[in-house]
Image 1 (cartoon, rainbow, N blue to C red):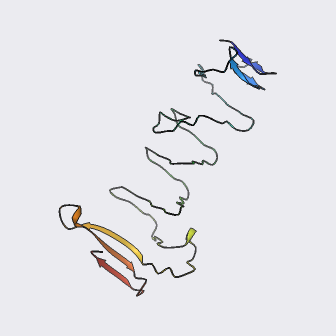
Image 2 (image 1 turned 45 degrees about the horizontal axis):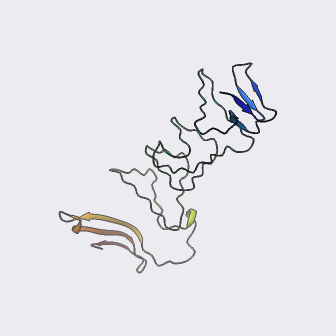
Image 3 (image 1 turned 90 degrees about the vertical axis):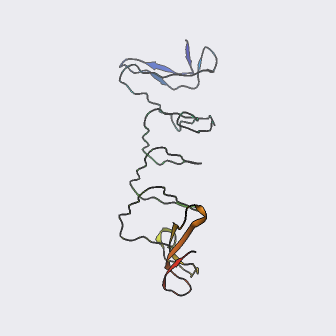
Length: 178
């Protein structure tokens, strides 16, 4: 394999490192490679990519698993800055969030499918303004919790109960079969 780099390219190998510097364009045997370019360090050294501005992956392959997509990483990934995902993020394992979790959108739904959910905080704010800001107008909506329960043997018997503040009366109410 012959490696031909762009003008003023240099390769250093004086400390166990191989560095391509000032590469204007890199191609193999006079053509851009149609196959894989494999960086396979045999020692304990890392592979560093230090672009002047951005490292851009132009492939637009859709990801449907951990083994598909434009960028596939077999090991863990550490991100030192912000992470922006332009479409759906699917996480197959556990997720730990050390900081605030803000769910934003015009229609927001959060589903928690667990056998038991623990909330450490002694208060749960329901129906506040964005970022817990004060409500500026009366929206006329009830505030409370809806419970699902079944009084029979199939989905036909799915019932709902409500406990909360009635916007109409201002009182705490318990309603069943709603």
